Length: 423
Image (cartoon, rainbow, N blue to C red; front, side):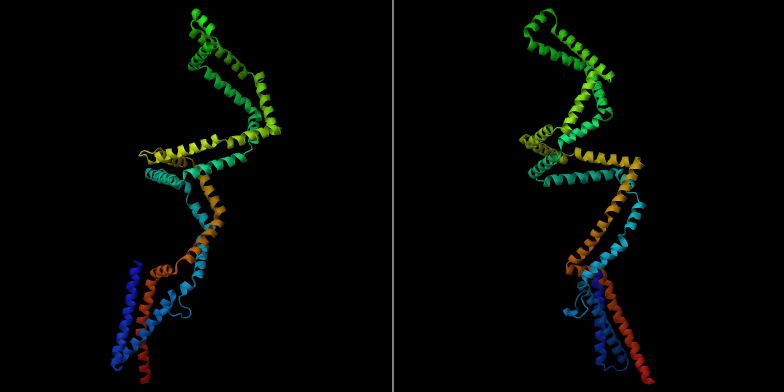
């Protein structure tokens, strides 16, 4: 559309210039007598105005007639200054930190995101786009280099980890304020509940029966003639469970039970060794290095990555992809969470504002430089074409107006000369 307007207006300007030229030739052939004196003067002025304005319009974009007149081809010649001025203008008037922060304060991004995610079509769109992006990424990924990179990265991270120091920190955290004793009580309660299950006691009875058969086959055969082996095993299992539960109950109820104290001493002793025993620290480091260098560990990583890669590709191609369903469900869950948690929305908006404030100077400089570099790298022919299509159409009216104004000025000036002659 801009290009067609430019061509149409350019034809109008050329047509008026040709009309003025034809009028000039016709008037000159009549020696400028009578009324032709008026048309001769008007057509001369019209041609001068048209040519002068044509020169001015063309000089903005290129050298008129291809000749390097001074101060022509202004826009291409001043492209770098134009790029810098335009970038500075946008930076000054559109990329001010206060204006951006006021805009963010006017709209809650978290609320907008929540409203957007709660629409089913938007969740479907997000899940679909996420599925396609993940599938294409997996297709493009070279599996072997990825596995090698993952294994190398994991090994590097684990080598930097001081396992003895990390374990000591965990134990230190567990022993603060008697937390390890609370964990022991919870473990005892869980074990007591597990032993109370009929299925567990039945399994213990079967294990005891098999153990007796292997360890004491003759005694078990002799006892089998006197008592049912299954009943014997069940009685032994019940007695074992009862004895274990009584012991666990005593430990659970007595904060000063010898087993608790022994557990406490064992934990603190090993904590001290992890912190102060160089031999133990070196041994742990050796175990760590041995694990990292072991081919089985590397093969395990490779297999896990390969299996995960194959599973994801199959699932992402499936008509009812679980990955897509999880993406859709996750989007809906997060949208609902934002809708019901004003504190979370406020925290997200605050985080966005803080991030903008922190990153704004860098983003402002980068965006300004991007505008400047883009304009400077723009091919000259494309830049001239776009500028001509954008503003050149209106500039053609300068040529049209110059022709018309010149025509009427020619009439006025000729009339003034006649008036002066009469006087």
